Image 1 (tube, rainbow, N blue to C red):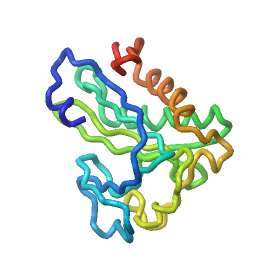
Image 2 (tube, rainbow, N blue to C red):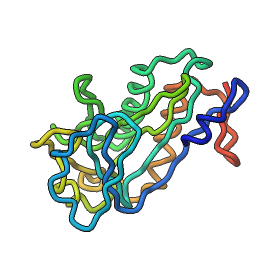
Image 3 (cartoon, helix red, strand yellow):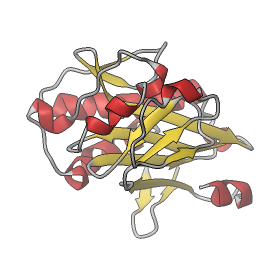
Length: 195
């Protein structure tokens, strides 16, 4: 992500990456050491995204957005809202009511966090993005103060009677994100977006 962002120019196409990570804790640029309580045998990586500590692992859908915000005429708050709304509208498709919180970015269901947002903007371009809990082992979240909040509980789609397959959930999420960001075409063979 950093290499693409560093080397891109005004003709470089925007990209959305969809993936899962092996078990890992990440700490954002302004992350405080006290938010890592007990990592056990899970590695902690210092990340250059915004935000505090979070956990990534199998069964969590990761969506990275590599977008030229200047070319797209898109502000950071609008990008965060697009990521959050993509999750909210996807959850609505499964009959689940969700909401965002401007003071604590991400998506929540009944007070529990189901998706986290962490971005980095460099040279007017974004990278990093969204982590959406689909069907994963949630116990590693007990080893951290998730997103810097000691009492924040987390949940996942499978606990809410939703799908258990991250790949299945990626389709509506990406469709919603493309709609939120006003992309009209996609080159799925290379994951490149066009206005």
